[in-house]
Amino acid sequence: MTATVEKVIGISEFGAQKALGILASSGKENAGVRVFVKSGGCSGYQYGMAIDDRELEGDTVILDRGVKLIVDRMSLPLLQGSEVDFIENMMGGGFTVHNPNATSACGCGHSFRTDGSQSPDGEGSSGCGSH
Image 1 (spheres, rainbow, N blue to C red):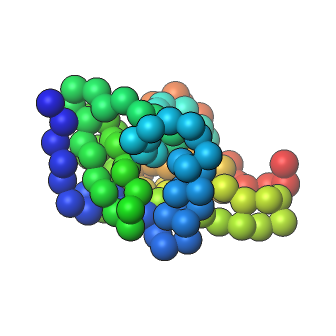
Image 2 (image 1 turned 60 degrees about the vertical axis):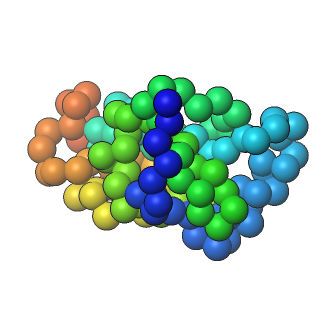
């Protein structure tokens, strides 16, 4: 059984436009954007996103700007109040997460830490640098 909660996590207007285009071309009916957090990255946690047409037990589903956002039970507390956005830059562009819970970030906004404590993987922080 999935829970539907309003605005635990949201998506920007530009992010929604990009996501709706990607979802429309995915070929998956009733698909949404799964937003998740995993261990790793230079600050301890890393964001991940995927097109997903499955809702699993414990998932929270949020509809924002016409986009279905799916968040698993373990990622939800770390993403509370976040906004998914799409950034365009000289490297092309991509989705990013603006997370008010992050106390430290690196990896161009793809990696974060929530409390200033040691990273789960013991790695230190590194900057954005050119890739």
